[in-house]
Amino acid sequence: MPLSRLLLVLFCTATLVHAQTNPSWTTSIAPFRIADNLYYVGSQELASYLVVTPKGDILINASLATSPLQIRASVEKLGFRWTDIKILLNSQAHADHMAGAAEVIRETHAKNMVMDGDVSVVETGARADFLSPSPNIPTYTPVHVDRVLHDEDTVTLGGVTLTALKTAGHTRGCTTWTMRSHLPGEPAGTSRNIVIVGGTGFWSEYHFVATPNHPVSYPGIVQDFQHTFAVLRTLPCDLFLGSHGGYFDLLTKLEHYPQDGPRVFIDPAGYKDFVADAEKTFEQALAKQQAAARR
Ligand SMILES: [Zn+2]
Image 1: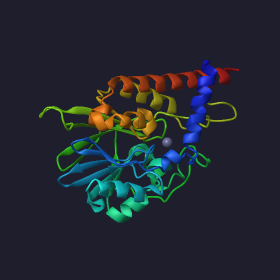
Image 2 (image 1 turned 120 degrees about the vertical axis):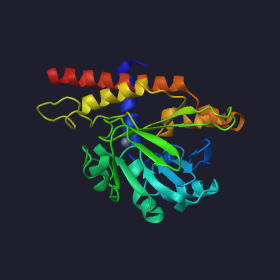
Image 3 (image 1 turned 90 degrees about the horizontal axis):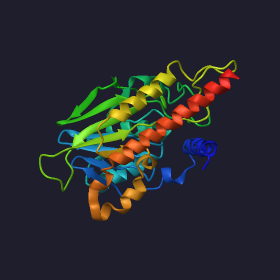
Image 4 (image 1 turned 30 degrees about the vertical axis):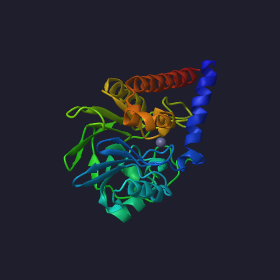
């Protein structure tokens, strides 16, 4: 496929993914175990993760306003209690990961922890998003942030620690979560590096270069994206996960889950390819915008 066409497809996919019409966003799948203390409780495409500890649980991504019912059903199907969720985390402040937060917090009283660049977005229900107002940035019920996270902060509960990496650009506080955990079926005492990619995409509304007609989306957006790729490139990754199932080919990997179990998510090569592709897509779009600005 010629490069221009490939880019067009990538842009259209990103736009479609943000148009809130994709049925895979709301299609249920059976919840499943990823590591000793990590479970998938999301839909086909919108990933939610439950981290289970002796002192209560952590939910990553409340997803759409309609998702909490589905997430709760998954949590309970696994045998865990909805009200044991003590902490709510997220991958990014867009509605597909955060619109359900108000309901999750109301029902569980979980503490809401958000990366610094996304705090105002979360507390205004996306009205402070740098792209807002836009049909691609649906608003949602604002939620109070209990703890502001900064790059490389850790979240610890019941002896389990997650690290928040600020991988901004897609949103200003886009967060990649990492943890180490033992996998069921692997030798005792071994553990794996788990990476939950926050998001690296963008679409035509993202302005990387100022033009007479339009300023940059936000000052520093290019540096943020480049920092994000530099961080992701060097991150040790055994289990490749993300905020969207499509990032890590969730449905394809799940086909092998009945035989192979959680090891289907061990995919360091797939992770490297994902990051390399995303970086290339960004650098090409940046070059194109720079060339257009010079004309
Ligand atoms: Zn997003």
